[in-house]
Structure formats: C-alpha cells, structure tokens
Image (cartoon, rainbow, N blue to C red; front, side, top):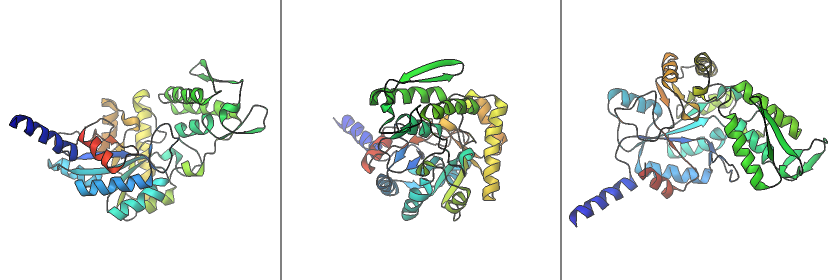
Length: 333
C-alpha cells in the first residue's frame, strides 16, 4: 500500500516537472501552418501558452549559460533552453516579441545558404509544388486548384541515375509522393538535391522563387533579432545536408563556412552549432570542435546533465501542443 503510493507520487511528480537535469527544446517555425506535413511549426498562440507554462515550471537559461554551467559541472535541474533551427523569418516576426514578453532567451541556428534569397528549403518547395494550390501544366497554362488537377500525368524524376514516378491524381497520392520524394532528397549532396528540384520546377512550370512568408531572415533581421542579447545566433551549416552522408572535407566546408559567414554578418564570434537533422558521427563532432564551437546540439532525446558531451547535447522536438500537453510530454522523456 505505502510503497505503491510512493511510486504513484514519484510518477506524478515526474509528469509535472522533470528532476533529472536541464532540457533543451527545439522549435522551427512560429506560424499557423495547419497543412504543413512536416509539423515544423507552432502557432503564435500556442507558443505563448508554452512560454507561460515553461516560465512557471522551469528556469529559462540561454544556451550560453547552460554551456557555462556544464563546463563547471553544475547543470541545474528544472532549467529550460529554447532553440530554433533553420532561421525562418517568422522567428523574427512572431517568436521574438513573445520571447521578449516572457523574458525568455533563445538561440536561433541559421542555415546561411538561403539567407538573403527568395528560395525555400527543399521540404517547403516540395510542399509548394506537390501539395500547392496553383500549378502550371506542361501546356504552359496556369491551372487553378490543387496540383492533382494534372490528371492523367505521372510525375517522373531521375534521382541518382534511377527514374522514379508518382501519380498525383488525389490528395492521398500527392501526400505519399511528397513524403517519398522528401526522404529521397534528404541524404543527397546539395547539388544532387538541386538537380531533382530543377526537374520538379520544369515539370510544374514554376520558378525557384518561394513564398515570402517561407523565407529565412535577412542579414539585417539577423542583426536586429540578436542586437540586445536576448536572442543569440548559432550556425546550422550552409546547405542543410545530412553531414553523415557527405565526405569529411565537405562536412568541414559546410561547418566552417556557415560559422564564418555569420561572424562576418554579425561582427562577433559564433560559438553554437546544431547538426542538421540532429545527426552526426565521431568525425562530424571532431570537425565541429576544430571549427571552434563550444556547444553543439543534436536531436537525441534526453536531459542535459553534468556528464553530457557539450558537442552532442540532447534536445526535445516541440510540436503545436498546448501548455498542458507540453508539460505532459516533457514528463514522458
């Protein structure tokens, strides 16, 4: 009886506030995107709910502060660190004001190759083309409606020397094609990925220019969002490759170039790094260390403790949950 009650109490306490170290949360976009198939978004309203719950139950720290505590062997329990991957412009438009309202610091990891361009990430461009609302058929005429209106046509792509094809005649087929093509593009070299995207643009008859609300921050916005120190900037490579899938020298170029570009734009050292897709091996970590980064974030699940590797810190991916659901999920880690 008493033993069972104690077990129930410990389980309840863990479900409310973790006691096992600090947590790092990983966000991407703060925007209303209910149709986005990758779930890389949290609405501004839900983000405000989450910040309210986090400030009530945890002690917000910057990634720099957590790095210092880790170096000292004094990682606190109930600490939370907010991070954003990729560098979308809505981090500046929507996230920054809410972080300021709640007094919560954050770090944004920026993919530098798309900064200052009208291009979208490949997963967003795939969504625009395959799941989009307006496409242009092979006859050159714009067709209103969903891309499935190209009835009778099969999408054919050459990927790494092999021709693959998909039907796009209904929502289910389009979504299946989206996920399959996404998974085929992810491990490719940047130039291979671009070659496939160009085939898609030609097939649909559209340009490479993306939607304005899907762009990354400009250099001026990066400077503005990080001017007062509430938001810090970290590197996230140039082209967002799976680093484990490319040769070491290309890994080095991606890692070091993104760091150098950000430092030139911001006029200060950039000490934080996040692995694209959260993946990296021993060689990747060594290259990150040699580049001069002090802390690097993965997507392995868990808490940051005094024993954590500063170049392989775990993070928790956050979805469009309300505040109570966020607390519940954190209690399950």
